[in-house]
Length: 168
Image (cartoon, rainbow, N blue to C red; front, top):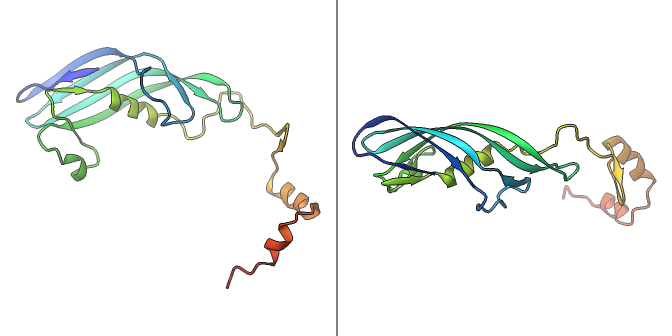
C-alpha cells in the first residue's frame, strides 16, 4: 500500500486498500505462520515536512499455539498512528516516533507488518488449550514436586554442584 505526499499542507486524505503481506518473511515471530490479506483504511494529513498517518483495520493471523502447536486464526484490530518526515534523514536518531521517508510516496507495507507484529501476544495460546502435564519423554512439575523428586534422584552432578562454594 502506498500513500502520496502532497506539496505543502493537505489535510484529511483517506485511502482504503487490501493489504497482502504473504510475501513477507515471517521469521521475526516464531508463532506467526501467516497473515491473511486484510482491508486497511489510512487517514493522513500532510504538513510542510511531516505526514501524520492514522491506520485502522482488522487482520486475521494464523498463529501456532505454544501448548499444542496447532495453528489457529487470531483476529486483531489495528488502530495506530505513524509519523513520517520527508526532509530530515536523521529524524530517526532524533525522535523515537518519527520515520524518515524521502517521498514522494510512502510504501506502508513494512510499517503495517511491524504494527501486526506488535499485536501478537508474547505467549500465544489457542483458546481452550491447556498446558499439558506430561507426554512421551517429558513431565511438567511444580517447584514442590521437583524438590521432592530431586531429593530422591541419584544425580551424579547434583552432589558436585552442592559442594561448590560460589561465594568465594
